[in-house]
Each structure stands twice: as structure tokens, then as C-alpha cells.
Image (cartoon, rainbow, N blue to C red; front, side, top):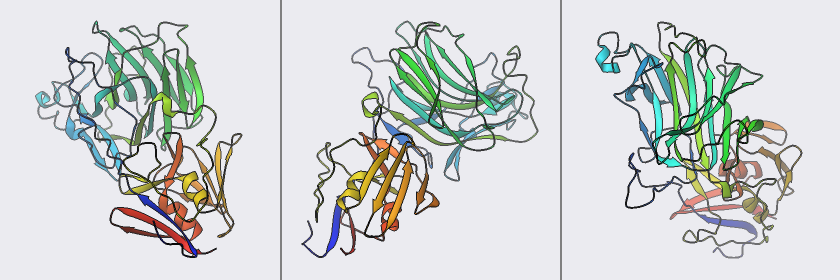
Length: 391
């Protein structure tokens, strides 16, 4: 650690969050239990081939009017984009699995069990278009378990929840949104437990299933985002009408959190940090707090950093806000979980990444904190050093 200067100095060792999990085979291995996926956050600025693949060269058939093509899954402007159009199907249907249209689907390579599944997306408006985020897996008998979030283009002011257990569905519920899901990005999520499924919109609980309408799913599933044109759905989605141009659904973030990493009533309930001149963080010790990266953005443990620099951090349960007050810089910062909007000294600030929860601690973009309090950041030899003037 650094010497005892008059400035406050905090040194971090970066642990870049690569989440380098092994690629799971799509078939179960008889010799060993399947390795299920772990907590991750993907901002979808580029394809992660270890975690994801784009469906290609086949179709679901039935009510699906499209074949899946991996060139209809693109990464642009820092987002995942799923496309529907008639290219190259108009010239050769065989290139679209003998369907008139092509569309995009993005799926994990591993299956995931109980936990919280989140997506930030913008849906597509139009008869017959279905924008979906769901889990899909099969039990030992090969019957499908599924949990759905679906936004139908015929009415994008609502979304539909549903689940299937061993292939049996009919558990759908229509939820009014209070906004148009095709106009802007919003956060959708479901929290899956053995005794319940809870759906959320922009962090607000909107629907719960407890098994009273039928057995809940139990088979782990792949996490899938897709968009597709529908036909012959008896009015459920209406008949697809191609507008003559490419339709694009956009996905800004997908996350999965294991149940043990979800506190029920508080954020970062750890023991307050002992303030001092320096702090040691050991990358090798998984129990220690670290700085990690999402893309090129360094994420820092909010409470740990600010209390180490003599600021105060409070959690407002009523407003679901994290409030930071720093006397030295006379700064006040207000954050909300899963939101990329912060208020710095009363001014609205858009952060590149939202506030996230990792191992029970709230993390925010490091530079948002250091800019607010006027601290300097030095990166050298795999370390990030944060310092500011005399106190």
C-alpha cells in the first residue's frame, strides 16, 4: 500500500468479469450432472460465443412464419438487435427453412435454474409480431418447461406472462404496462423459485404465480431472446403483415442472478467500512470486494469505496434509493438499483451502465463516483488507484 500522505488513497486490484464458463453441450451427459449457468450480466455490446449462440438454419414450424438465421442477430450501437425481413427468403425460401421470412433468436449455451432473469429491451409494433424473452428446457422425459415474457405487436401497451410445465401451458396473464413497449427501452424480469414465479416491470412486481393454476416448472432452461412473425394463432397475435422493410427489436441488457445473491429487503447490508488511509483487496480471495469490468466500464463497490473515502452511504427503503453524501466535496449522489440514471447534486446523470447487485453489494461505474467527488484515478500495473486532495 501507499505511504501515509495527506491525501486519501484507495487502491484496487481489477478483477475483470469475464464469466468464462464452459460451453454446455445441448444434449445431457449421462456420466455427470449438467453444469448449470451462474450469475452474469451481459450488456450486449458484442457477441459472447462462450455464453450465447444465434439460432441458424432451422424453424420452429407451426405458427412460426420464419426460419432462424444468424445474420438476423446483429450487434450495433452497443445493443443486440433481432431482425425480421424477407431477405434472402424472397429469392430462395430454402435459405429461410422454407419459410417466407427470416428472423433472429439469441440463446444461451447453458441452462439456468432457479433465480432472477432480467432483460432490458424495446419491442416491435405490428400485427403478428412477437417479441419474447423466456427460458426453455426439458425434464428427464423430454417434456418442455418454459417461463415467458411476450410482447405482442398488435398491442404493445401490454405484455403477457405464461409458463409451461411438462408441455402443459394455459397459464397466461395479460398485464397492462402504462406505456408503449415499442417506444423505448424498459426493464422486464421474472424471479423463479420452487414455490413461485414473480414477474416485474421496471422493478415493480406486477404478477405472481404460486402453482394454484397448475404445477410450476422445475427443469432448468436456456435463456432466449427472440422475435418472430406469427400465423394461424386464432387471434392471439393476429396474422403477420410484412411492412416491406426490416423490423428491429433491440435488447440492451440480459442478466441472471442466483437466488442467494438477492437480498430481500436491503442493499449492501454489510458491516460499515472502517475508514482509513489505505485498503488491501486480494483478487485471489473470492470473499473480498473487487473492481471488475463490464465491457470497458470499471464497476466499483459503492459503499466500500465511498465510506473508505469518508463519505456516508444510506439506503432509503421507501424510495428504494442509495444516497451518498460527501462532506469534503459537498456532493450528494442518489442511485437506484438496476437504473442507469443517477442524480449528482440534483442534476440528472445518465450512466453507461446501471447500478447492479453482485454478491450482495451495490456496484456503480467507478468514474461516476470519482468525477462527483473530484478524485483522481491512476491505472498502473493492473491496479486502479483513487486519490484526492488534502482533508
